[in-house]
Amino acid sequence: MKLKEANGEIARLKAQLAEKKDYDEMKAKIDSVPTFCLVKNKNHGGHHQGEWPTDVWAFLCDCLSTRVSTNVLQCLLRKFQLHFLPWMDTKAFQIPSRRYIDDNRFTMSVAVEICAAMQWAAASGIHMGLDSTGIEGNECMSLWGVLDNGTNGAEMVTLAGCRLERGGTAELQVEFVKEMLQEAQDKVEHVRGLVPGPQRQLVKQVGKKLLPKIRSIMNDTCNCALKTQTLLAEAVMEELKKTPGW
Image (cartoon, rainbow, N blue to C red; front, side):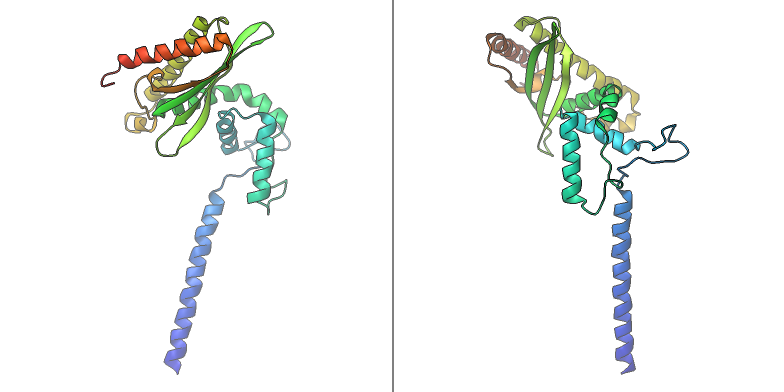
């Protein structure tokens, strides 16, 4: 009888230890989730409410690279909190203000463009889109792509948003696209040069040039846009002919 009770006690203690282990593992995972609210510490600066952690800044930077607007980003964050983190209130899960995001777009732009260039360089194929428009008398172009990165499926990444171009002709637009692709490749090469040798493989590159990786071109249907598409496709084919093994 005593042996049976002892075995029962051992089984109960083992169950308690297993529960505690599961709890500790779950707690460790929860503790590893970055804080999504303003933080006050001795290094937070002069703002009385604190400052956003670096993890939040990096997250916003990554979101902005998908061409999402400030208002849409705020709405998506709130919906995510309501559906997946309902136990958190507005103090525990704070949504950055439009002013904060817009004020930081300029400082984020450098990191966003470098991140976008690295994503384009790591893609095996690019379904590119471009759109040109006039803003206050200036010709501007946006350049984005749906990237095939092989393992994680497709992802849309904006390479250039409302960038000033030389003019509105098809020939100038094609030259602008080439310049943007070369600029992106130069950024990736620069980053690889800054990373120590053993870690350089983390900055992945598929091919040495971006232009040959374009698989399709999405643009407007006006005459100028169609001509741009044709000239750009010809430029891609010319570059492919120079690629060994094509």
